[in-house]
Structures are given as structure tokens and as C-alpha cells.
View 1 (spheres, one colour):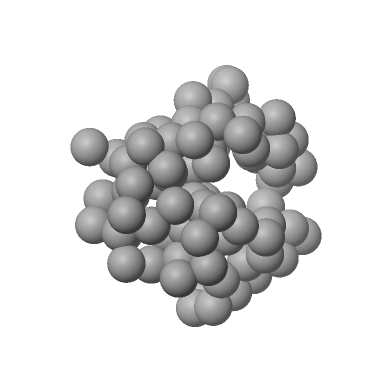
View 2 (tube, rainbow, N blue to C red):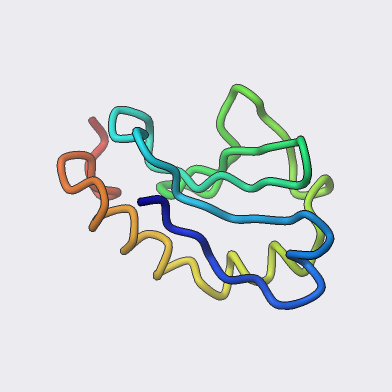
Length: 92
């Protein structure tokens, strides 16, 4: 089951979501940020946006960024729990 970071109102109502999706075990560790039909993948090892699709923090609501930064350790822990064969601390 996908992990969803609970976002405070009104972010969810505005179409923002932050998830660790299913079937991502061979991908570099990341969290996917959604806003309606757009999505960005943020690497959990280095905090950089993965390509594709790329992106920058300028495209993300500052409140979403604050929630990600506030929950950074939890997101990393959730990835490691979900994908123990592809842990954050591994470079493979």
C-alpha cells in the first residue's frame, strides 16, 4: 500500500499530495509530489528532483515544502520500511 503524507487543509483540497508509491523498489529512493495532474519526484538521498520529470521548488507550494522538510526523517523511514532491499543509505 502506498504511503501518503497527511497534508493540512486546504492543501489536499487544492489537489496537493505527497506519496511513496507502490512498485518503486528499483527506482532511486524518492517521494512523489502531486498537484492535480502534475507530478515531481524528489530524491530521498539528496533532496534533488529526479529526471524525469525534473522540476524545482519554485513549482511547489511553500506549505507543501514545509511539510516535506518537517517530515523528512519520517519519509526516509517509510521508504526504508517499504523497500528494505533499496535503502536510502545504499548507493546501489
